[in-house]
Length: 316
Ligand SMILES: C[S@@+](CC[C@H](N)C(=O)[O-])C[C@H]1O[C@@H](n2cnc3c(N)ncnc32)[C@H](O)[C@@H]1O
Figure 1 (cartoon, protein in one colour):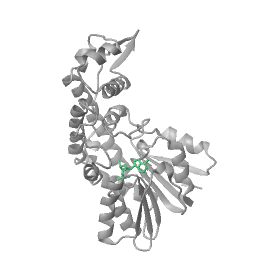
Figure 2 (cartoon, protein in one colour):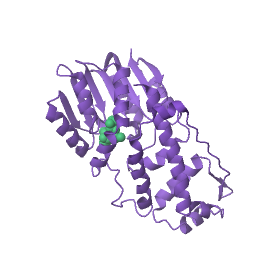
Figure 3 (spheres, helix red, strand yellow):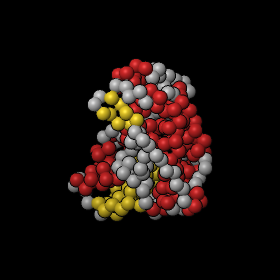
Figure 4 (cartoon, protein in one colour):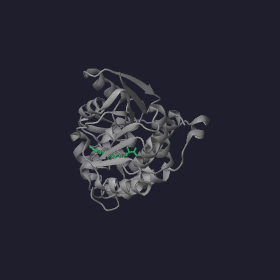
């Protein structure tokens, strides 16, 4: 299993998200309203969508994608062309089962345009833990976990710390470290942890799970591997959490960060729009941002980019 597979799927997710943005702008009358070159106020007053905060976010997404610009106080639609090219290699790497989950999320936007608290929006980690569990259980998620285990060399007897572990990873990594190893998972969602606990208790795995916000963690043990997959995007004070994550490594230990990094996936703003239906979503980090935070710290680390979605940090 290789990081190219993960990259190819994230890239494809982005392509599909851009097409969905175009679909949303068309069906909700956003483009026809923008064609009149309104001021921001006229746009918000006349588009007819009650959730103005989401409308502003949508507009910002269109700007980031280069579809809209502001010229002397008026919103203008730009000529826009989008080339979707998928190589034969990328098709071979596609793992189809994330598509149906993303289709559910695209549909949620229709309801979110009515109200941010619509019951058909299923993106909250606690209220909608079951939906997240389906997402985290997809073949795509199982694939990236395998890649993370491979690049960090997780094996029997190791001690692993997983920040924002969710409901599925504890069972997988707990099985890999085995009964002479140790896995500690933290997550701020009690519902995600309940599902995780059910899985590890069934197998009696050497797993400890703690409900804690990563921003408040004070890990005392030292670990061979620290994992952060799809979690930095929910953390506002990323710098502090990253430094703590490295501090908790043994010498020679590895931190693996997996994200759809902003600076390696063009048009990622389209995917961010959909993920922002989760109220804690802060945007994807960039590789550069993570690297410069760690370079600026006192920590002695070496960093390696693996493809476009993985960053491997070793404590020297
Ligand atoms: C997209 S899921 C990824 C779960 C897991 N890392 C995986 O790849 O399967 C994000 C997880 O991070 C947790 N999370 C988000 N922000 C957090 C925070 N500030 N502290 C602890 N957990 C957090 C959520 O509850 C959720 O379980």
